[in-house]
Image 1 (cartoon, rainbow, N blue to C red):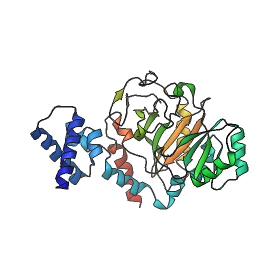
Image 2: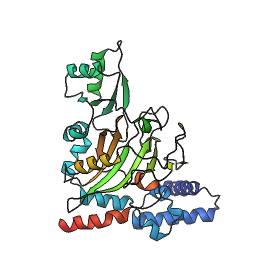
Image 3: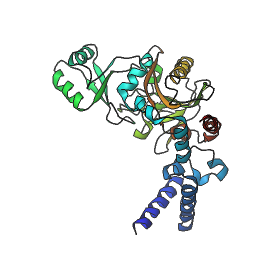
Length: 330
């Protein structure tokens, strides 16, 4: 009985996503189509919906990086023993210190005096868990004269927190949404011949009052042309709503040129060589007030959906030859 209810929920979820008024037979056809995709090709429900497979032919569907292809990329390109350099924010910051562009401390390792020094030169600090993901657990710490510094420091230790200076982002990017640092997610592959290819790049825009810009936390993403640094799609959020202008600020999204794009590409390609055992990485980058490249973090299993949902174009054909070459070399 429980399985029948689950199937009905799946069917209704897909039917709602289409935006059409469907009869029972049409809904059942969609469910059967999804189940075929799931059991034969490893497609999960959210992929079927967000890539609009319900209106795509099989040939188009096979162009997408779905869960099965994603697992293949990670398995072939990345070695698990070096995941620690990306999973642990403190270790990541140390490894890629050249690109950090801000002061920071690890509350569990650095001293109370170091925390006080950081507080003395900042009105706000950005706090995130040392092993956090998707912006979860991140918040702004207001620094004031009345703050019990010692009590806050002890709390940060209990939270196993990384405490960083707040990034002062480029004014043109802040115009989209000033409450969050609006970052770029740039996905790279380190190829067999030691070249670095940019597989996809997106800008992530927060919403009014939000501290984080993450797509899965109701942020907005739009695809960037990796050659020019110009946004080439409308924005889209996790509810699949499309935006020509940012819904809070009114700033136009398509056509915006990312400041310092060439410098960003150079920095990312340099960083991609630091750990050649982790070839597939999604880099989160902020552009500083004066155009400086500031690395926020790296993701060794960067979500594949944000780079395909904005333009509704699959990227598997870009990955497949690289993965095949890596497999030959193993």
